[in-house]
Image (tube, rainbow, N blue to C red; front, side):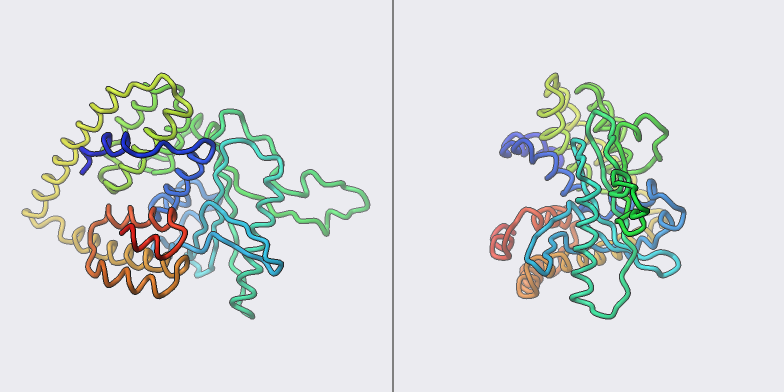
Length: 336
């Protein structure tokens, strides 16, 4: 399957500028493993970094207020802390600085809370962690709260919105010590690459890690690099080296499978097999939840009938991207 990556990508329609980067990040951060690594490696407090990974679940990204105004975030996830407290993560990817980001995130938080109060009246609101992931080459200088740029006359800041977002600026992250074995660290290294050769070098150094985490994720990173980063940022792309890299991926994947089989024969990976089965069951549950939230229960039931025992992790990841791409349940079912 990995051998088809280059051919598949070349046959695919090139993404439209300027939406290509936004769509790529929507796909990447639709993966719970990527979101888990963002929290585990970059959350601003030990309590957040020690969250319950098993509680991570997607939440609706599309919000409509009482006046029927609509806003959409790049990703929204819910999770629980070790204390049992509930938290919602609202994620926005930005390829350029936005001076209005503090206001935009304040509106996102307000609409998220308004929707919860309307659909779950009387229940306590979760804490909210707004995250802006900046991939631009210039440093981010925009104010991170509305209060930061407001007039300070007459002590009125007391009544002004002081919510602040967590800024993850790729340039600053890549210049420092990034957590090892972290999927978001790989994103930062790829975004910070200063040429095609450096970008391919990052992929080559991280390929075994990505394949071990999930072959489907490896393909997501590869397609993102091939279809977005190289055409838009790196005109000196070496396509022949990319083809060679894909061929090497096949050999590495085969070796990894052989290693797993050897361990299985020695009786040392029974626990991993069981853990994978539990992970796939959880992945199917998350996927079904996403289908229900976007297309409704009827579409979810029809999906279950068509794919009653799907246990291919890569295929499940592809279906997650399909949910994001499709506008209606009918379109989603037709593309299965």
